[in-house]
Amino acid sequence: MPSDSDTANQAHAPRNVACRVTSVERAARDIYIVRLTRENGEALNHTAGQYARVAFNGQPERDYSIASRPSAAEFEFHIRNMNGGPSSYVATSLQPGEPAHVRGPFGATYLRTDHAGPILAIGGGSGLAPMKAIVEEALAHGMTQPIHLYAGVRDEPDLYLTEHFGELEARHPNFRFVPVLSHPSGPTRRRTGMVPEAVAADFTDLSDAKAYLAGPPPMVEATLARLPELGMAPANIHADSFIGEAERRQRDGE
Image 1 (cartoon, rainbow, N blue to C red):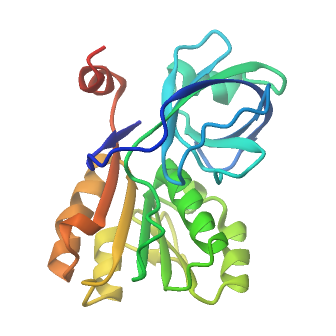
Image 2: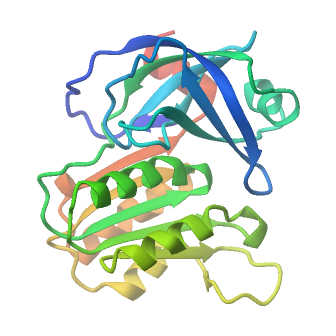
């Protein structure tokens, strides 16, 4: 679940939206893409990269990054099966037509459209969700600077949406998609190693760039340490670490 490392104020006040599940798709080894339609057509008025608190039928709410663009007709969430709690329910029981409740938006790791320099979007595991929204929104907004999306996973079965991002690459010459496998189980044509090292191999000067990060804390923390070494200003780094439920409750005073 996301935890803000940037304290910028949001323009959108949280609101509650009643939804219905329209589809549940297994996208990778333990990642499920869930799409929700809004019962009354209401939107969250979120900014690309933010997250919401989602409760499925009879399940406690959890924080999930919004993978869909703000203008999309449906909400899209990428949910990793943690083998317990709501994520297990999604993986084993959730069906189209079931009710869902969405509350938000939250989070300060969102697209800054006034930035003209290169963009690095870095997602680990289901952290690809907010990066998908950021990249799609930037391209739709007509941002023409170089946009690099790094997707860090353990192995090939953990990758997903590769065809989707390949199609975006074909349509947008300023966009580049870079999957990185940290623990490949066999020969692969993908980049291998850790995401921070892949970024460092590709760039020597990121002083004009802005980065958006989401994913497991070890990946986020290692990347946060590496980017300033490449010249990126701390003010240009926006990151969400996916923390546990107990940490979230402590953070939010629940």
